[in-house]
Length: 227
Image 1 (spheres, rainbow, N blue to C red):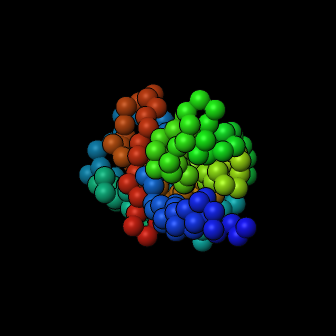
Image 2: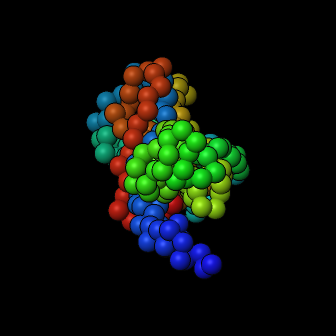
Image 3: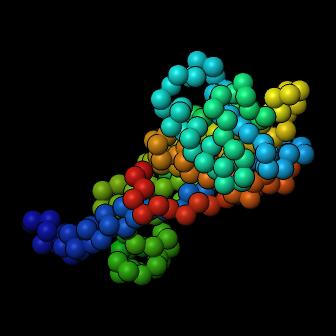
């Protein structure tokens, strides 16, 4: 029998386009941000320069691209960018990274999505004991996975990548540390062009923050964000 002529066959054909549309929708970006701050000087009259934590990246165009994001955020705070670090009042060291990812596999539902030994028939739109109908679903605060009971027999596999940025601010006159911050996130993306801008925005949300506190900051998705 042609699979398309079975109830699950035509149902899958009807539902799959909707599921793909749902999967393509942008999701908010969640980050954990920890900041420590001494007495930062008032922005008026203070200049800064953003330099790489790793000196080997000083000539990197990629670093300069991300450093410009940090500079823009500091400018919004009222600080003024200096032409070089030599003439700046504040030296801002910046670093970013993403790991190789970790594969996650989990059991999500019984083999048959419509029948259960105790619950009887479950329609495609009803919420059964396996947690709902097929689709692209979110699991917890960080992980995402493709959930297809017709193919995966209740198993799903997805990769979680951990990304992070580190930001420190020193007073150049005496090398005193004035600020340390770290923002990190776990997501289904390993693209730094997507991750770093979101992490920078999270870092400067409520800047400089409460010293010694770790907070969760959600960045609204951009309309054209590519994951």
